[in-house]
Amino acid sequence: MTIFVMAPLIDYGNGSGYSDPHTVIAALVDNAIYYAVMCVADGAIVRAVAEMYVGEVPTIDGTVQHGLSKLYQLFSNAVIIGAAVGIPAVSILLFLVWISGGAQVVVILYDTVFLIVVIGVIVVTYHTYPIIMVEDKGPVESIRRSYDMSRGHRVYICTVIVLFFVAKFILHTICNVIGAKAGGAVTALMVLSKLLISIIFATLGSM
Image (cartoon, rainbow, N blue to C red; front, side):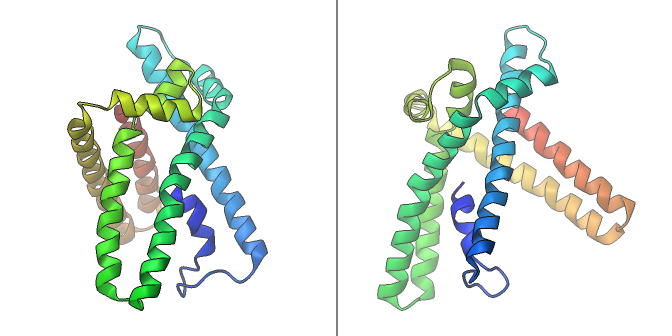
């Protein structure tokens, strides 16, 4: 979600900000729609897993509708967490770049610390979506509840997240390499494979 805030402000072609405000607005809207869809999809997956856990048979229609009904809570939760991390992080980075004259060592050190902070935030907020979908908590309350629930289990959660990330990254890289070399229909198949891999890992991560 931090990317949702920052991505429209960066022109990846030359590393500068977009000069056209309409482009920024369009990019923000595009990112907002994307993350809204992802919130509903993640919420639906969490709901489906929760229903299977108690012996019920989930339906696509039912879980998606439940995800849609919780869109405000899910999206607000992502915005709050992203803003809480992103806004201070960007402010500190700009300050450090300003006082150091853009020294590469300072930027690398900052990136390392920022990565550790992000991992920590992911760990303590890992249960927010399940809490919203199953316990009907609000955005802020779900963060507090997730923080409490993660106590005593944070090393385990962090290990699982890292292992999932590495495994997913390796599988996606394999698909990218195969798709780039083969081309044509194989490339399309690899895109679908990456989507399927993402769905599988999202489902496993919801258990």
